[in-house]
Image 1: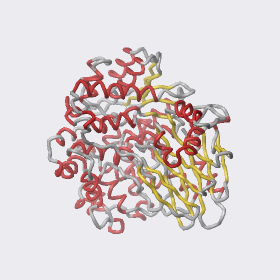
Image 2: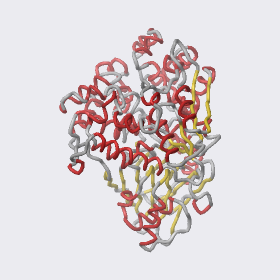
Image 3: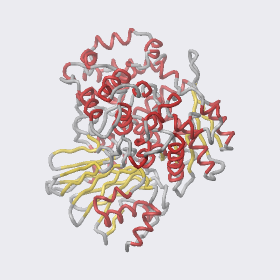
Image 4: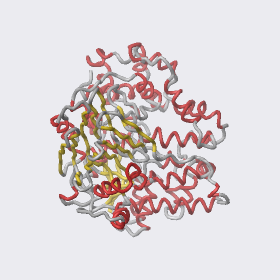
Length: 594
């Protein structure tokens, strides 16, 4: 797990090594254990290292194999690297380290651009093919590891974070109206390839992009599971699906133990993280380090789920860490969290993840977490009604359940200079849901949730906040084989039991019933959900700051309307629009974007 950066030039000039150094230094927290820089004439690569596999200098990056004519930087973890290394040795390859990084180099030498088909894990890779004078960029199937791009005439820059690209300078930082439309429609999500800035894009998940030395490029999507019934699964009943998915989940959890350092678990007390603890214990992991966080209660809303996390910790005899923080810790944490965001993220629990990661990183370098289960196994409230609507009604049903605002309201929010002249969010939604490869409305929505929304919401949130403290977080529910199997599973097995039905049945085999049958919870941070007190003051000051007034993103009359609505009424509506707008301004100001 690391931070990667670099610059390629297509106009005959030399890459700006100082700019690459600045990008690399901006990601020190992602890789506090080492750094490296390598120049190959038209390409310069930078790297910050977090030592997880092969702790020796032999595993350092950028990694260059002169005999293969290859060099690369890589962020992430290839869980099946021991098996791949054995396979590649049989094919005649030699290795000088025990790292997964070198396995990627040999895999490319063996299989070319199809090397990604053989990798099981989370990764962002930038590889220099020196013989072909070619740059190969690749991102993992579920978009767990990020890769941001800034293109200009004759030049391509890339980095693990958007702020690192800003540190290099010479980036178009004007607001992208379409991305702003998405941000304000979809709970602050801006799907790839866009970001809120015109001059920065991100490589989409499951994508390989090949860039030639003259700047020509091509890309292809290398993985896309079908959300349709596979004849190979014909005849499987609920018990068969439970056994198959249970086996895949157990494999996913075991895969994510590969490391040369201890692996902990972020234990919220919910079903998903509790299952991970139970399955790790089942696999023989004793005295796991587990971590839970809680905040002050407010207005009758409980600020922690310690009752459930304690129950799980006792049941499996974990070395449990309870982390309790007061509201006084939140306002300074909001500012630090916003600065650590690779993009603006409006979910209130992003601050909780930042604070949790800070504490966890003092004990372990690697932890497993339950992100992705709701998207993959239909755990959200809007999934149940979608199981009953016709395939051609999916867009309407999803928009009614999920959108923060429709296009008409957006026209009242955004100033004319930043307004999108079409309903871009609804258009993208309709196109994705109408695409072939999904049998039912719910199949189409789960595909959208998992492959379009999830990489730029919970996945991005966890990566940004954990890597801000040099903590690697692994997500078993986003294992490629598990996701593909779940995609083929009939929707009725997923929505059963109020959602995640098949998971709940598997959980009954390993967890106390009280954890399985508890009401669904979310990361509770009452002070942020309500946006009151000092947090409200922080948001309103950001929206009234000189930079915000000069930028003029939002219509003043709309802001005045929001400010007139009581905090509690906004929280009760389920989407605090004041927080969403203020968070965007805080992020822009934090990075001095004008």
